[in-house]
Image 1 (cartoon, rainbow, N blue to C red):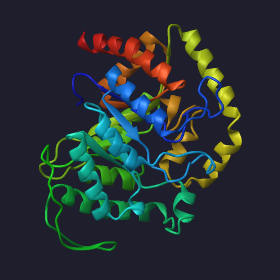
Image 2: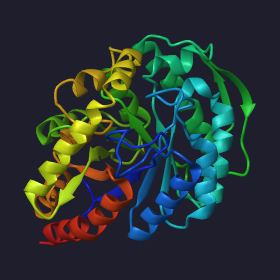
Image 3: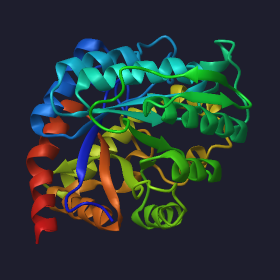
Length: 353
């Protein structure tokens, strides 16, 4: 079961706006300066986490800017003092020994506030154009499972001897070890059967893409019932969602319609992105069910409405098992502030009662 009160996080704008790229109220900006300011403001407002997605090229349009996730996260670790920094990783881009050393360093810089989000890749050109290749869905997850098993041991400060299908590692140990905890937290995404099996075996938190409450409840029931490694804590659950919270329901729905209209301007880019996405991912199939704005399920989670309605829906998700809400907004800074000031206090009152 979740703790008494949920945590709230935000998506860093590593490749620009989340709902529509051609928005006069939020001009395209994926710069380091904008992301730094956004994360510092999120920390000031009381947000608990920031998710830094990993792409080497912009997944919407390769001509657009893209922040590099791991160097940015190291800088954010030094600039912040409280917020958890969750950085995504596609295993094929880094050998686990190299990535473990990078993660260990950011963990030290942050003072024990770092976490890793394992994502087994969906954007085909990102890997193919680099000459890495793009294996089939289940093969990517088999690689990711071996990769994270090696990473786990390295981050725990163990001497690693591993002779597997993809890696051969002899007498490897990283120092200095983590002085804050056993290792950084592992967040795992993906909703296919291989993804569910992987997160039950190696994850600490399962990230679920935004979708209706009844679907989220079924996912939590399935993965929450799976066998965990001996000594592992109970698995926790996070939900991605795009939020539109306003004083009235009519204002929220009007803004949603506005974002849908703006998103139509990006339709050629969205179609290209769809063509680049592995059709075998559950994410691809889930997103086709519901009209939405935002990434990773976006408004399909239903957090659109007046402040009281959105707060009730957040509280209901939390009671169903969601511990962390990873949120998107547009315009981001304005609505991030509004959520912190108007919705979060209402959620606290509902759950306290």
